[in-house]
Length: 336
Image 1: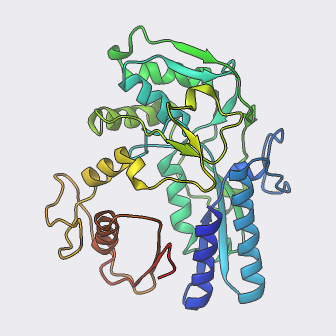
Image 2 (image 1 turned 180 degrees about the vertical axis):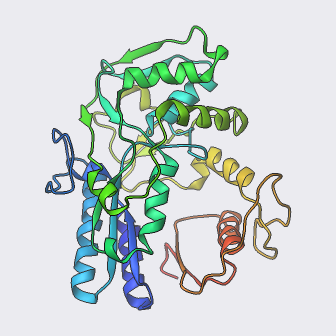
């Protein structure tokens, strides 16, 4: 988060044509024990993820003071919806539950399941983020964004079982040993509604789950969860996360090869129309429709970390498909 975002901010300043930087932070920046979380609270992040997000927020404020770069910061929470990577067992509890149901397994929760979260359907988060680049009055603001109704993880698990349908009959919730985590993470969205008064009502959990389950049953149903063979720190890792042969490494030793599930999903969802690039195809995926966006004020900065040529070709062709006129700047991990 920190390294890539810092590079993006730097390139935005250097380009001199970026009018506003919209950053997706997280309510993890607030820290624990601060419910309801409001934008007026001074962030006190407690884990590397929240620390990295808040560091980027501070970098944006500095870039504004020094170079005049406008910014808007959003702090979403527990986002889910069609297209989500369900095959990573380390993150996104709703996706983990659906993957377990898809595999015919019981659902697992760390602790007693009384932890509360507000789950956010993707459209409730994506719309204000998209609008923020165009509205003058939101420049320099920070917004919490997402669902409004808090649910316990136990309630979420039961809702997932119901949404999955008859195939989930007999599935139960298994409680694992507790892990260190925030017990209650609930943010206020009053400021968001004040600045974006015409947003539609948030999608309820049951409605969102119906859409998510429909997608989950038709896309990638035979894929296996992502598992990492190496991590930076194994100490205090939940036993269910440890894989056979997992080792500690001084630097995170993980490339796109470990995420085969996500690559297959990308290949299924994206229809490539650009030829001449590695991995590009001229065939369109049935049912995938789009309208190219011929915008003169949109550009892309792509930072590449150990990606294979065919993977990079898919990324570039996907961007070019939707933004045929937009400039792209590529930077490899070797600084090229």
